[in-house]
Length: 212
Image (cartoon, rainbow, N blue to C red; front, side):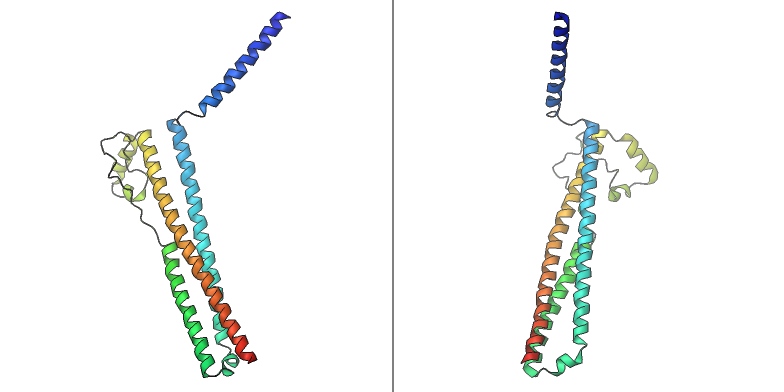
């Protein structure tokens, strides 16, 4: 009976030690392969964010196209303009000109949001003789600087630490690109909102002038 109790107590101690070991394991630095997987996951998440922002930009352009098409249909209705006097036509013309200004601003911001970014990493504070200095084997702008054999040789000579450093640099550049894209998208949707307000004002003015 005592033997069984001692054995049960030992099992409890072993389980407790394993549990404590797992708790301490969460505070240790990541190993090289763990860091490699974590960086790849972060890069994939950054790519997903970039794809999402591209879809958001395309959606804004589709909505803008719908507004423009509605304005063209409205302008083609000669019966609407026929009932306006000279002052009312000037007012409508000024509002439509304002809409055109917002439309131009929208197009400029759409170009900024969708244009290919160039985010060259800054290595000024990173000594080249340090063991973890990136080797330039992943990013296409670095790859094309070497011929095929030199690129293969660079891959054979790179260490896992250097590869992880390069992944970290690539992730940093991707985050900079995502940040720039998000700022551009906020301006893009701001212009789209302004265009919608001005378009609503055009419709409201036509309705008001028609009732006068």
